[in-house]
Image (cartoon, rainbow, N blue to C red; front, side, top):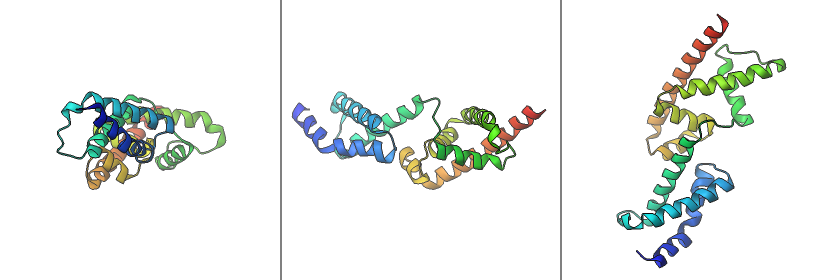
Amino acid sequence: MSEELYQSWVEQHTEDVYHYFRCHLKLSVEQSEELTHQTFIAAWKSMDKYSGLSGVKAWLLGIARNMGRKLFHAQKRLAISGDMERELREETSSWGATSDTPEQLLQRKQDVEMLYHVVSELPEKKREVFSLRYLHNLSVDEVAAFLDEPKETIRSRLRFAREEVKKKWERRIRQNHS
């Protein structure tokens, strides 16, 4: 395929790919720009594999989706935003984990560390939906679109993941208090 054709793809679809990363995956401007660039490099390298069965935009967004997946898998430890930390605290407070007093700042840090460890022990599919939903703060609809799975499958997998996290959390709490 020609360089001119590739250049027309870049001109026509750069904004769509960028918005996929920025809006759909809620990545930073810098990450979105970098992944958009990487997406078009990957497209250039695999232009000969483009069959034309799907539209160019769909093909490029498929490459972008794979880039996004690679990014999520590469990030082993995620920074939890203040909103996310509050959401996790609310969820875990009903599990009898810790006090909410200010002097428990260290305990909260340990709770977050323990939560990361508990989540890392989940089977891959449960860990993936749990991380995307609660650590990356994507909606169920966004997780379903990202993973190309039905929303009900995501909801079910998320429910089982929460139950497993809760059981493991409670087990660790009992172990720490004995």
